[in-house]
Length: 313
Image 1 (cartoon, rainbow, N blue to C red):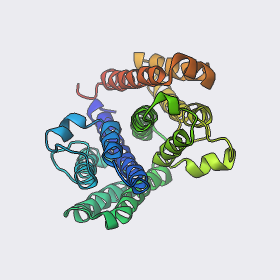
Image 2 (image 1 turned 180 degrees about the horizontal axis):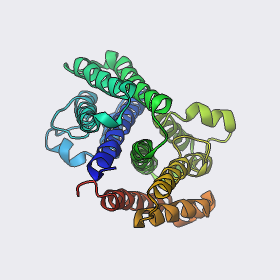
Image 3 (image 1 turned 90 degrees about the vertical axis):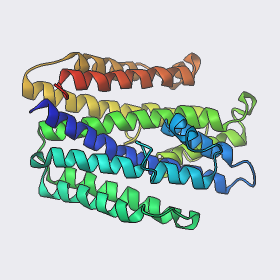
Image 4 (image 1 turned 135 degrees about the horizontal axis):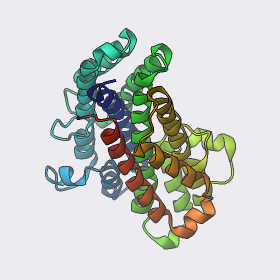
């Protein structure tokens, strides 16, 4: 496969995943803001921080409120990570790799883009926000369903899934780190009822709240939730699940092309590093320090994949 085509697939599905993750972040921020009678600005600031767009946001807005944050993250064309911008970028990449996609996948992506153009053409009222976020998630699910249901399990599929897993791992790691430490006012509150509310918010951010309750109804603690989101291989949005899926798809590429690259070794090392860890050892090291190192390794992996498969060569 041409590197340009591989890169188009990789980034197409990174952008699609980013749109869904942004919608989940906004929903979590909206939920927690509704429970607060005052000082909701700290929650909206944490949403912007988690999305990694603080500098871009501060150039346009001086305060963090619901209207500004929702508009910036969902429909601002000047924000390259807004839902509008990334769905446009996903559709542009889909056009680039059109001949590598089934009709169903192309149609789902194109429909997603046209739906977003209509949905996000006007500022969104808070009363309409739940419906808008639901549409964004539903459209992403339709693309993912078309991919799983109609694409051959070949290198095209592998690059699409690798992009998804890289983006998902980055997003979940940032949610664990930024939302927890930004929302929790003081280290002295760790283990308190407020601490538990923050972890519940994190679970809702990655649509894992009900799954966690199924497995561990009574144990809403920092350790149990972090264990679930970082190390549980059953949760589709855990770091462990993402890394296992990533390594599996990268191994398929190595087998198909008959060549391993530095990115394969790096991915293997990341997965083995997770498998050797316990949540106790992570907390002993420091959750923030562990997550920071993971994000750096994940970013490095993305760059290695781009270089080794010559996305721009």
